Image 1: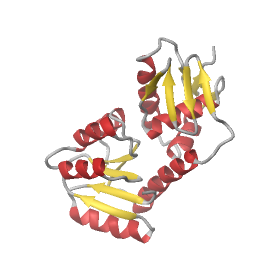
Image 2: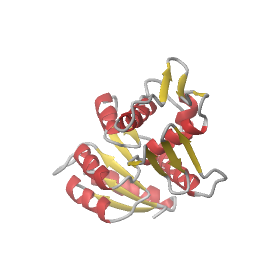
Image 3: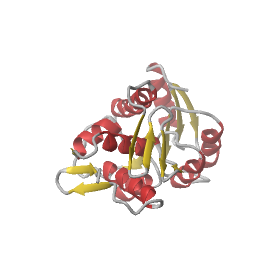
Image 4: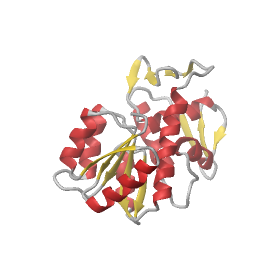
Length: 228
């Protein structure tokens, strides 16, 4: 499972090229060419990463992602049209971990995939810390679970990492560049709102069970997890 990739894209030529390239990099690749069969595959098998195109027959990428997130938190990289900010933002709001615009460089895509697999491997390793807790919010590192006022929270892998890194640096400013590198494994680029959207998603989930302000935005600086 650690090196398995599911590609859901109706461009069969692209899928063949990506499969050949990723398999040469020691990944196991499965391809599906419509949203319906792709979703079934994603729900019934375990994958390290899913590459999900937006424009798909039967179910579009957003429908697939929304349905997937009801049951699974498998990391998802959306394949979006170049310059289409709406697709990128909407995908992130629905729980995508990252996006890459078409046409893309295969090396860049490989770097994104490896960043996600490294992140998961790193966070599942044993750590000296057992948990982090503030104001009824508890993050258990060993089980990668989060509760707020004794209520379990369902977070994507990226949302969990955002919360983990902010809580770990509680009371200190974490700039966007550093958070992007830690969470997505890549530098922050101009006009990239990925980190903002992941933070926003975490805030919304926390607000469901507490009126405490956990994460404050410092314009031009980054974010701070409030300890008081």
